[in-house]
Length: 256
Image 1 (cartoon, rainbow, N blue to C red):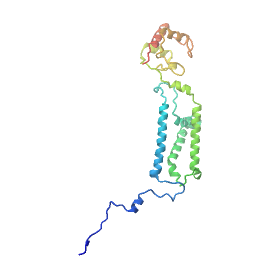
Image 2: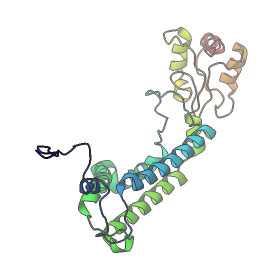
Image 3: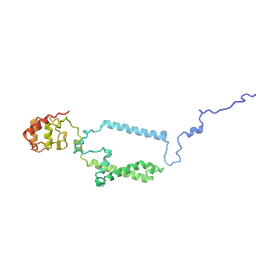
Image 4: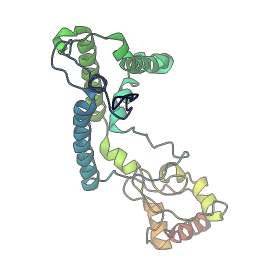
């Protein structure tokens, strides 16, 4: 018997075949025109780095300029004109035009809907291998048209909006726990004071707040008779007893 007779060689599954290792690597993109690279990790790493830079910049911007807050929405305040955030101003402006509002309001909803659906379907519609914008005129043209429309409509909405009036409407004001069943409030309602000062007496762009004025009852009565600012004289039409109760009620309103 010779040494080694009967020995057999077996393969070890833990040792990878070089050809298999090569297949697990990134795909060869040389067959595609233009500059190409592997998605992982080259392209994805660059995307993460750019996203991190923008995220840090956005966080610094929010820390330096906090978002402005307005008072709590009041459905009973018919004088308040709501205003969307800047990234929806182009839709707000488009709904001002006659062809996209009123009886044609459905058109104002369909146009942005078509645009957003087209943006979602863009990768499936335009599947060309070219990356240069000039070699993809259809996609480039629609994108430039969309950017121009959004920029123009946003500019128009911001330029023709009364920002001072909007800031006055949304200003946070002091509130009080008002007993609307009281005799003083009933006199205020009877004299139509809530038309300008609001149902909760917190004021409006046309009239100041009646809460926490710091005025005495006599001073309130004098203003009701002689007027002040935008309020004309002889606005109060009730009796002297009603004027006294109204003045005492307003002077007693304290901010919470």
